[in-house]
Figure: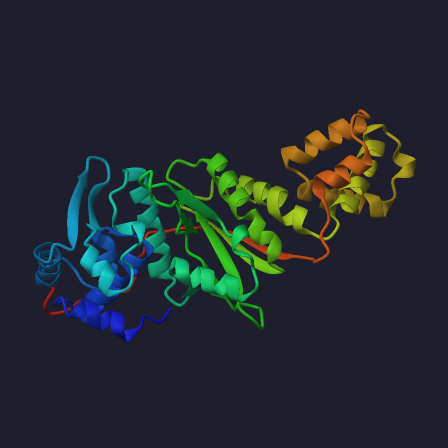
Length: 334
């Protein structure tokens, strides 16, 4: 990540140090909210004169408000329009007030960004539109939401409103690969995850390759999240998943009917591989209907579809830990 010097200069003009300006840029761009431990870890500071001066500047400039939550402690909200305007973020929704569940997720997003500053993020809505439209992706497949204002005003269409980190990954590829992410809320709701993925599916269909990063504070839902993602995205986007699924059904049916002589060693190897691949409830329902004669092969092929272009999809899940940074003692903070 490279922050344009003009943005740092715009924030230091308010009296912030360069480190403070960099931190505020990241907060404004990716979160809107932060907690003290994130600032301390980012700057390598401890509680003392330096941190006191920073909080005083935030409140004297009326750039941030302090919010107290009974179970979540103190949270700082960067809200000043003039600060966002100075770095070209005036219309970003991070400066608006939100409920605590939303705030927790914003802080989690900031933890990821602070720990992964080397990423090449598409930071703003215009950045994302420019990238995808520049790769001949039609705007109507991009995830969007329409906002209705006054009755006489035209509705406003906004894109990528979830604001989850989206970056270009060059790992193992000669060209950058768009990598999307989803940050699980504090209370896991995989129904919300499914809706999120469904919103992005039209865009995924247009991309020959992309990555997806599932982030959560614990790994308790990683297996289920992967199962859902494979069912909704990875398998349907393969060139001809219906052929493999139907072969798996045939082998499984023969085994269920104890027709062991008709099942070869190769069939057993394939079955064991396909069992985890087609483990989602969706495929279980298809199998039962097909086995009972209620569903024809043609209907299964229609259900899964086929694609002329083979997609390469990389899904991974990662535990999102609080950003620790590198802290160093200094005379000022002792």
